[in-house]
Image (cartoon, rainbow, N blue to C red):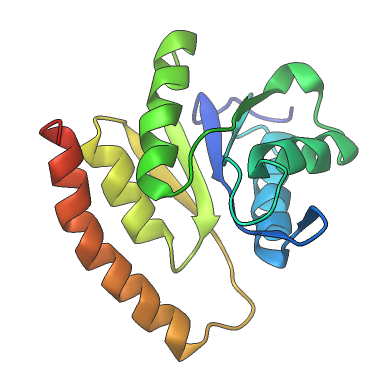
Length: 164
């Protein structure tokens, strides 16, 4: 690593797995961004967060493989393989963060998703900053979906915090 880490860990959020277990473009972009943060010395650990979605395997397992192939040592990678959405990413990652004593967290996800992800992590008590992965082309439908998802998360996160 080339500098003093600014955070204890980067939590790289999963994305879709294609049929046949292939990583989606979004998943590849997010991992590459996280690997870049690790290689630049900004974080000493990567927490890959994502369970099984529509197609196996768990997103975190694919992400781990991509990071290993890019030269990140196995000891620097932790996987969370149960989450199915952003709220579960934050909730399940929080347990891993606490077990490892990691307090300064850098959340890695696509730029359009980062506001919702940071809101969720912070409302669950995680001291999180964000590192946005640039998205080559953002469709209007993606923006509309994310706006609706954020509004739904205002309710879901508060319900989760109350134990509901």
